Length: 342
Image (cartoon, rainbow, N blue to C red; front, side, top):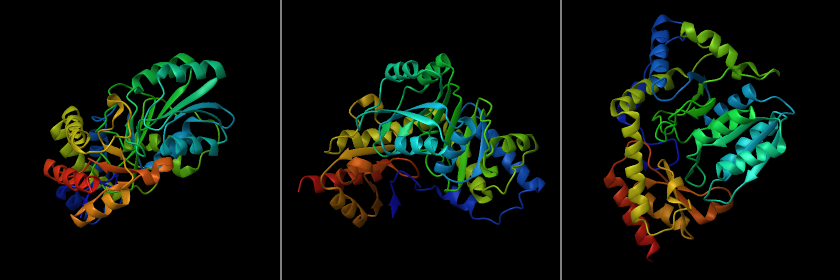
């Protein structure tokens, strides 16, 4: 089977080989050298200090929230899909006051709507935004503008970029980004990754496993406070070599080209309502034949995903991350269109 899913993705063989090795004891000089090298490579992908913790994208988001939000603070969250709801849920679990901007599926709220709400509420301490809404194939490409809004109202900007970076790059400095190893970073699940451009600001107790101060304190020694995902880091070293050899901008363009094959040729309506917000990592299409399409593609050796949230049974999602080719995508188009035309 070949995986064209939102993640985990189909991995290059070199990454699999790098991952499948005896793990070092994480306090040895040998492993410190590996970790130092991976952190250096991550710093070339996005702005900020890279932190690697054991966990998935969900843990990275929770870690971000608990280090930058205090109970009873006002936080604004644009919600335009399932992962926006989850981001709001994480913030609510911290005891903060969440103000949601609910927007229609397949679209994102204009930045001025977010700014207007922030100024209406007043004393907003954080704005939390999903960069790539995995459930609907929608990318919020207003991240830089959102940072300007956060700065203007005295808030911290929290970005969930779990299914975006580095294929959907963030080209300027933002306060905090949460992401993970198993999607566009081309590694196995297990590493929660954060890019920090602003010191953690929470003054409320934080579980030790997600306390960023502990990670930042040990980073200059190329160590982590707790056992890191050792073999995931081996794989990340290989995958980052691959990504950086291509170049982040070309890597982004590759994903755009792959996604455009599907957007152009599949005989279904994309979930994103505007071309500008179509995701280049996870494409999504409306259909009343989702089960038939998924089943038929499996017959030909391809795994895709069904929908999520309110369009769960009325959409499909096809990832374009990982070790896939134009031939794979053209075959997927052929099979999907055959089912659509029945």
